[in-house]
Amino acid sequence: MAEDPQPVRVALLNDYDIVIQGLARMLEPYRGRVHLVEFDSRLPVVRPVDVALYDTFAQDQADRAGLQDLLERGAADKVVLYSWNTHEALVEAALRRGASGYLSKGMSADELVLALEKVAAGERVTDRTAYREDDGGDWPGRSEGLSAREAEIVALITQGLTNDDITKRTYLSINSVKSYIRSAYRKIGVTRRPQAVLWGVRHGFEPDTLRRPGPDADD
Amino acid sequence: MAEDPQPVRVALLNDYDIVIQGLARMLEPYRGRVHLVEFDSRLPVVRPVDVALYDTFAQDQADRAGLQDLLERGAADKVVLYSWNTHEALVEAALRRGASGYLSKGMSADELVLALEKVAAGERVTDRTAYREDDGGDWPGRSEGLSAREAEIVALITQGLTNDDITKRTYLSINSVKSYIRSAYRKIGVTRRPQAVLWGVRHGFEPDTLRRPGPDADD
DNA sequence: GGCCATCTCACCCCCAGGGGTGGTGTGGGA
DNA sequence: TCCCACACCACCCCTGGGGGTGAGATGGCC
Image (tube, rainbow over all chains, first blue to last red; front, side):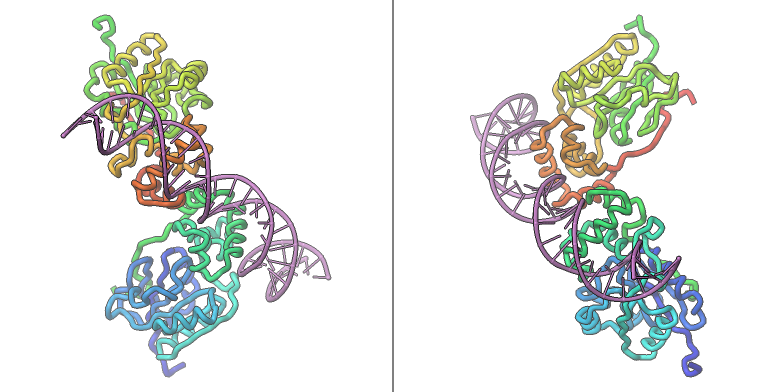
């Protein structure tokens, strides 16, 4: 490791600031190897970074979206997807669209940092470890008892998507989506979608539009 | 009129401040006869007034609600309903529940002021003039092209009510409710209820919780 | 081992909602 | 007179959504 003494400059991307904050907390112990330069929700990265880490919670899985839209010109040329959706087809689609890596949320923080370093060094890295909630990160609704998946479904409902839209966004079957809706509704105490939307609006499930410097920004 | 030189002290009540402001603008030219003392959204009247004028836009029509809950003890003992719902049964129910008057939004401002003066003088006043939008007042969504009735329906949707709930709140048939929904959705550019809820949240259709002194308050 | 949580999925049934069509009445403006 | 807007209503049909039941897999804890 002595051959790569420069920390990797990283931007964290997701539409929910709480998700970014959770990721930043996960990477906090590794600030000697990873510099957190910028956090962006629905805004492109403007500061120069080595890697943009895009958490796919409740948003495009990069199977359609243009990855280059995530970055201002010159900010970076490496985008890494960080997701719990690790279907092989999805991973391949993202790589075909120019992603420099596709990492599973099932990785430990240590593994994640190592993977970021590899990507910064020019490798293309993929990992499909099964996701488990113990592995760090944060999401809206966690303090209200929602699992990560339930929270993602509620976030997509709060964005106004139909169940069918949600199947396409999450790569789940309609039956799985309905199951998550059922369990989530029980936890948040609603029975109809308009109620769920209102609950989501009032509990931080609307996407943020926000750019913030990370602790290691040069500003 | 020389026999009643004291202006009537009035509080205006409705869950949407824009509705209160519209009503206040309507009464503005009559400030010599009507003192606007307090404006309350979802909070009880605390300042002493002669009459509390309760606009029923998108809320209980006082057919069930306790009118006394609208007032702090000692604030006033006269509540007047101001509504475009003028079914005879509804008027009677409200009077039975202690309302001191039931006034139609179809009245002119002049007529409204006269009626308030009568109520303050101890009379029980009812008016069932047919409603027309030209007659003053304001509502959320007006600048977006919604009629008063369409706006009320959208407000109730934004509050999370089902269509059946709305029939009970508005005294309309389910088919009328659906018709209003159709026309409102066309105007605001949505096709599903969750979208309508989000639109409503973003366009001032969530109820306010607010108490404000009127221009004539003694504070 | 059992239990629980989470993820994922299937199937059945019914309700809530929304598209469409059509209609009546009132009032105002050209 | 016609047209438009608004209020109000009916009926038809279909979609979107949500309740229920059941199942499988994994992992962690007692």
